[in-house]
Length: 316
Image 1 (spheres, rainbow, N blue to C red):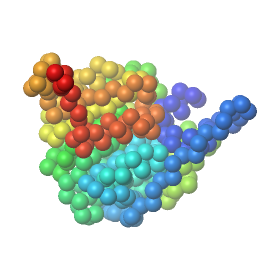
Image 2 (image 1 turned 90 degrees about the vertical axis):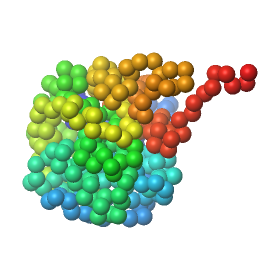
Image 3 (image 1 turned 180 degrees about the horizontal axis):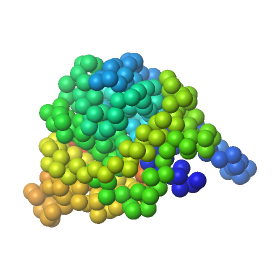
Image 4 (image 1 turned 90 degrees about the horizontal axis):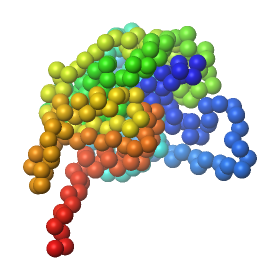
C-alpha cells in the first residue's frame, strides 16, 4: 500500500493539509514542539463557477496586480497552495481553478484530457474578463498549463511549469509501474489520508472519489509525447523541478534544450542565453515542491523580470 499511495500522490496530494494533520495515527514524540498551523488561505475577492465546454469549473480570484493563472496538481485543489498563496497574491491577481473532477469542480462524463482542459482555461479566462496572463502550473496543472500555452501562445506572458514533463517516458521506470496500480478500489484504503478527507470536505459529489481514481489511473497509463509541441511555447518559459523529482534528470535537461537552453555557454555578456530558464531546487521532491518558499521566490523572480545580473567587474 505505501507504493500505491505514493502513486496516488502523483499530482500532489494535499500535503498542505498534512502540515496540520499527520497521515498516520502515530503520535509525535512528546518532546517535539507542535508544528505551526498553516497560513490561512486569504479570502477570495471573487469566486464561483464557470462553464467551459461541458465542465463547470470552480474558481477563486484573490490579490491585486498583473493576472496570474494558478493550476494545482492531481488529487489536489486550489487549497493546496494555502501556505504560499499570501506571497503569490501580494503583487499579483491570482486566478486559481479547481481542475476537472478536483476540489469543487465536478468530474462529469466528458473525457479527461490535458488538451481539453487546456482549451477550457482559455474559455474560463475569457468569461472572467482576462485576456493575457502569466501562468504557473504544477504537475497535472503543469500539463494543463502546457496545453493552454501551446493552444493560446498570444495569451501567455510568461509560463512556469513545475514538476511537469513533456513525455511519459520522462518518469522513472518504477513510477510507471506504480501508476498502473491507481484505480477506484484504492478509495477504501485512503479514508484516513488528507487526499480523501479534503476531497470529501469540498467536493459537490463526494461519491465520485473512486471514479476520479479510475479516471486518473486510466489517464496516467496512456502514452503521450508532446515533443512536437514544445517549439510552440514561444513565450518565456521557466521549468522547475526538484532534485529528487519523479522525472529523470535527463528528461528535465532535454526539455530545457528543446526550448533552446543548455546548448552552449551563456557567454560573458549572457549573449548566448535564451529567454527560457531551468531551475532545479535542492532537497525537493515531486510531493513537497509546491509548498517550498524557494519555488515562490524562483517563480516570481522570473515572472516579474527581477533576474539579477551580477557584474564581476563591479567595484573595480
